[in-house]
Structure formats: C-alpha cells, structure tokens
Length: 488
Ligand SMILES: Nc1ncnc2c1ncn2[C@@H]1O[C@H](COP(=O)(O)OP(=O)(O)OP(=O)(O)O)[C@@H](O)[C@H]1O
Ligand SMILES: C[C@H](O)[C@H](O)[C@@H](O)C(=O)CO
Ligand SMILES: [Mg+2]
Image (cartoon, rainbow, N blue to C red; front, top):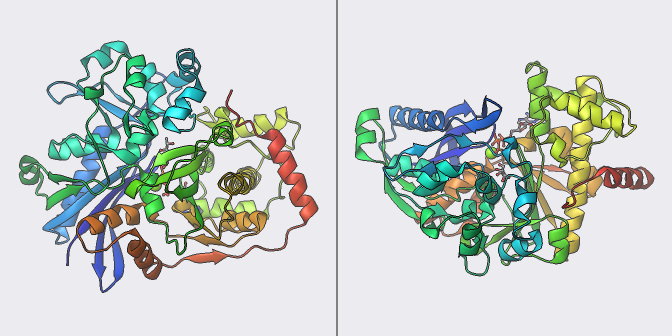
C-alpha cells in the first residue's frame, strides 16, 4: 500500500494529512495541523514563509514517526502571493500578503497602461486588487531588479524542498499574467512591469513529478523519502478536484477563508457579461477552467471571532446566528472596506449605520448579518452563473470548513430552492491526493477519484424549506441595491 502525503495551507490554517487507498476506500489521517495568518510589520502584512517550511518539516517528521518511510508529497496553498529569489537561490525580502494595502491604487495606475477590458480578453481573470500582476506593479523596484526568479508560494516551497523550480499552471493562472490564447505567461504584460519571461519558471501541469526531497534535508531532519508531485497547487483548484460530483451539471462553493463559487468548464467563458460581473477563468487540472467568483467568505466571521478574543467557536457563532432576527442588517460582502479593516466588527456596524439599517450589536446579530449576506451572495451568484452558462445546475456542493456551518448551508438551500450537498471538509486535501494517486496509477482518472471520495466520506444533503416568495424578492432587491461589486 502506497503512502500519499498532502500539505494544504490555507490563509487561516494548514494541515499535513496522510492518505491511503485501501480496497477502494480513501482514508485520511491528520498528522499535523497549524495556524496560518499574516504578520504585521511597520504597516505592511507578510506571511511567515520560514514558519510554513518548518511546519511542513514537522509534519514529515511526524509521518516518519508514524511509520511512513516512503511516500509521494503534494503541496497546495492560497493563490496570488509570491517570493522573489536571487541568483544564489536566496529569498529576497519579505513575502507580502495579498491583504497588504500597497495595492490599493495599483489597478487604477496599471489600467492607465492597459485597460481592464484588454487585460480580461488576454487572461479571463477577475479583477481583484491584489492579483499578482498588480502586486508586482507596485513592488519595490530595487528588490525586483535583484530577482532572478519570481515564484508563487507553493512553487517556492517545492523549490526549497527539492531545488527544482517550476510554475504549476492552476496557481500561475491566478497571477492574471497567463495568456489564455498562448497558454503561457503574456510577455507583453510582463514587459509593462519591466519583467522578462525567464524570471518565471517553466509552466507544468498538476501531476508533474518534481523529484525527491534534497538528501541533505532528509538526513538533517530524519524525513521519509518523499517524491514531490505537483498537486493542483492553487488550493481552490485542489478543492474543486475533491468535489464529490456525480454528473455533468454541477456547481461548487469552496467555503473557507474565501467562498469560491463556480463551475468546472472545458472552455473559458470571457463574455462581456462575465467580465462586467467580474467572474474569473482560473485554470484547472486536466485542461479545465474554474469559472468562478471570489466572495469574501468566512474571513468575515474569522475576524469577528478574533475581535471577541476567540470566546466563541465557529459552531457557537453559527448557533447564535440562528437565534437572531433574520435579514435585519445586510452588507455587500465583496466591498473592499471588508478586505482588511482594522476592526471587522466596527466596519460592519458602521456600514449598517451609514445605510440606515439596524446596527447589529450582539455576537449573534453580527454573525447573522454576515451569514445572511453570504447566503444572499451565494443565491445571487449561482443564479448569475446559470444565466451566463445557460445551465440549470443539478448539483450544488459546499466543500471546505464552511460545509460544517449547518445554519449557512441550510439558509443557502432555502434561498436557492435547491438541494445542497455539504462536504467533505477536507476537499482540498482530497483533490491534492487525487492528483498524486492518478499520477501513481492507483486511480484511473478524476471521475474515479470523485466516485471514491463520494464512497469514502459522509456527504450531508440540505433540502430547501418553504420560503415566502415576497420576503425572498424583498431581500434580493435590498441585497442587490447594497451590492457594489461592479468594476470601477
Ligand atoms: N464546526 C463549524 N461550524 C461552523 N463553521 C465552521 C466549522 N468548522 C469550520 N468552520 C468554518 O470553516 C472555516 C475554515 O475553513 P477551511 O479550514 O476550509 O479554511 P482554510 O483552509 O484554513 O483557509 P482557506 O480558505 O484559505 O483554504 C472557518 O473560518 C469557519 O468559518
Ligand atoms: C487570494 C486568492 O483569491 C485566494 O487565495 C483564493 O483563490 C483562495 O484560494 C482561497 O483559498
Ligand atoms: Mg483551505
């Protein structure tokens, strides 16, 4: 029986999970979990990349202690952020978090050189203020000049472990620098930033075999002998692979720090409506495209929970929301004011005051405002996606940590009037493992992998409850009037 290790590092937490496939059942054993999150230094926000490497090493050491002598290893992380690497392989400077305010005006400045319309026609990528393209356009020129390589976070982690430098396509597509037509980095876009194509590693597909962990690391840290295989290194791309879809017409909501809501397509969709509504075409595994939209997601409640000194679990906050008055106050989840405010609770309260809504006070009222607003977002975007693709989605899957939020899963089913299938929580890990097992020949293809996931993990179905159509129409109208997510 082969051993497969998945390292999945999201914005709020990371985990090292040991996967095995026994008689058609996929079994997971969590062997290490750690908190993630950016650190603030002099008004800027960075990731502690050295700590992430330490945590991966600790997870591998634990795997060895549990008896894993040989394995394959896949790594996935959040998107867009990058590491500058010098001619001697040294890291140059800090690793900025995408929530750093340095990009607040970057898009407006860059669009003086190239319109968003032209950019979208090239890349099909949604406008998020922190896309890698915008980050690099404002990065300190001194550091950029010293950079021989620009690696996205998971590619850099691969590099530190193996010495091999490659750029895996699913995550590379989130840079907004990959050209849909040439299927490579767009050299004209790079030139706008004063960058060369050879500063970015060669593109590779999920399943690419990177090679073994460097021997000196194996010896120094008593690690298992691991061969690194490129997962779909964008965590959302792995999450989509881990969706236990049955048919051909299905949508997903990868619910974690962000809610990524979309469909898996064989071709990109870059219509004028898709661009105007700010939908993206991130690349998926096996030549697919993840036509989706970023929704601010559980970041909102994560920050509120911290501001209550973590006095409540996420389950308790969902419970308190259940008892609060429905649709009393709503927020436009994707408004930039919620991207990284000094205090999320205050940002929510002041928005409600500014818009003449009742101001939420208690933890339950704040949580209810967040979850009502998220559910109305999901309702709006699923209907937009169905309109743009011409599909009536027969299956809707919520995966990731948010699939444990019973209140929000049920409310989403009620508003949409559709069944919602919730779980697995660790869909990202499962998608990471699926690529390894397919590369290893243990699983034939992604269809078989999804069938095995369906068979191996409990999936809870939320059936829609009756909703007053007048109330629904009223809330949809109110939400739409508050919603600012138009490209300025
Ligand atoms: N029992 C629960 N009840 C309600 N919500 C929960 C529960 N467990 C987890 N969550 C939600 O799941 C979120 C974390 O999801 P997940 O672990 O998928 O995120 P992540 O992988 O750390 O981050 P990223 O989204 O960047 O991948 C929490 O912020 C919380 O809102
Ligand atoms: C910054 C990105 O939008 C973010 O990482 C999102 O793509 C994601 O993957 C969240 O897990
Ligand atoms: Mg995650």
